[in-house]
Length: 228
Image (tube, rainbow, N blue to C red; front, side, top):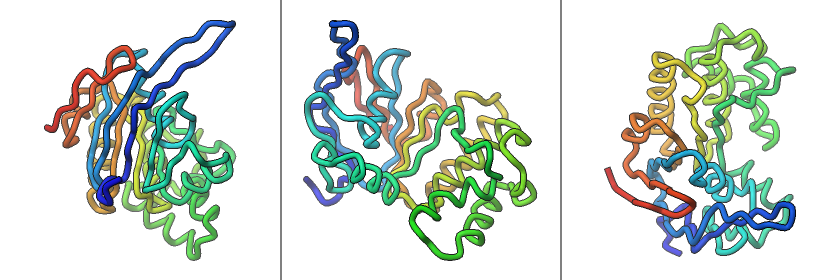
């Protein structure tokens, strides 16, 4: 594996078995992503986008083939080792925010840093909330925040553990047009500043166009892989 590639997906397939039948969601997916890239994975519903993201991030295991993340072969790791890889190297942004409802905005941002036993976590979390324009909402709970504000907290949390690679699954999917545009600008701004590799799963072709590469899936296979 080349030292410059942070992610390699090698001939990966994923099959789900249910009620005695097999459903193949991904077939022979093969690509590599250099460190610092911005990549969009697009395609119609059911094309395997979110499944592929889950395999790349170590949230699920491939049925065949290998995923190598930051020089580590994920299919050789146990669940605890996978969790450690995610905590140390990976950031996530989800369509439905995935904030912990019993924690304030500040506490949600602090969680990844506390898991890593970092120091000065309150100060760094406040700095990140300031970057996303939420200094005055730090003590609010998710239910007290709008969708756009919740996604800003999610952005701050995603960058809090200084990830090598950030996976965003439909990050603007639950937001209106104006809010979506603001979140999009923040995402790319924070990403440039941190120098993180960014992989976005999205239906939004306008969002995809802001990345440097678009991988399009169709029926579980790569239909095209274009540099923008």
